[in-house]
Image (tube, rainbow, N blue to C red; front, side, top):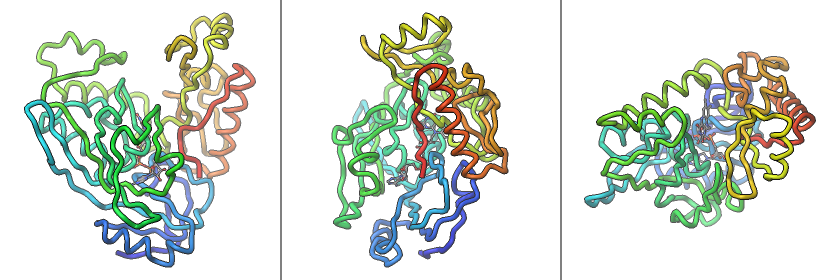
Length: 335
Ligand SMILES: Cc1cc2nc3c(=O)[nH]c(=O)nc-3n(C[C@H](O)[C@H](O)[C@H](O)COP(=O)(O)OP(=O)(O)OC[C@H]3O[C@@H](n4cnc5c(N)ncnc54)[C@H](O)[C@@H]3O)c2cc1C
């Protein structure tokens, strides 16, 4: 276990910006993590935890310590005739866990196929896609409290899960380091096929989780950049939720605007549609550009600087606000 100095973040973040952190350290056990938390480099500097770096945009060098988990295991800890409970180390790649579930016949994670990042962050971010959210299968989140240096846990109901949100992003931001996550999966076939491209699968005889996964991966590959080739953090902005009153005015001018009612008072509008219809498809500043196949994505052509990304983010927010009167908020963690 080594504490590395002036460590480059270009290859450990999917935005691939040329930035560095003052200290970087990985640990493979809870004991090693506690040792790091007791180090002067941790005690005397600000710090944060990093997973696969797929939702982080560092706008400058990070003048502190980054910690990364290499706690990697998948254990079956309970089972009944209906369900199985798995405990998974925070450092397991999220999609490896999804593949494991599919291979073993555990239902519930397949709609989240292909999301970059690691298991620890899945519980922080409440990742979601294709009509599913990870909070639907999370039972318990095991952590180390960086204040008491002791192990603790949060049951599902204590995590305050909401759209891409959890308690770990707010009052507990960076206090609790997730060491493992417990998921409850179904042993009985059950599919969520409400999202557009999956609807057609409902008619398929002997539908399998692999069918769902393949459909999702093929849609994802057709519209999202592969982080190994093109830098991005996926969706840069959250889809805004506006009042039905504001939506009523908007739809009168733009009848084609897609929308998803949240309840009687609120409507969700796709940020990608707003960006595209504000005329920003392909728009670039320096090496940062609006990804043509999905305008919700800010991509790096290989030469983007942090300033390019920040300027483009501001330009998009301003232009969309001027045209539609809607304020976009980043989904990505801007640091
Ligand atoms: C091409 C692409 C497609 C994407 N598609 C989706 C999608 O469909 N749905 C979706 O929800 N997201 C999507 N994302 C966003 C991203 O993959 C998720 O937010 C993911 O959960 C981030 O995981 P990570 O391990 O990379 O975390 P990081 O980006 O490294 O960190 C994210 C946050 O989690 C915290 N964190 C990380 N590990 C721990 C830990 N062990 N303990 C405590 N805190 C921790 C960090 O401090 C940070 O606040 C996409 C990203 C890309 C690049």
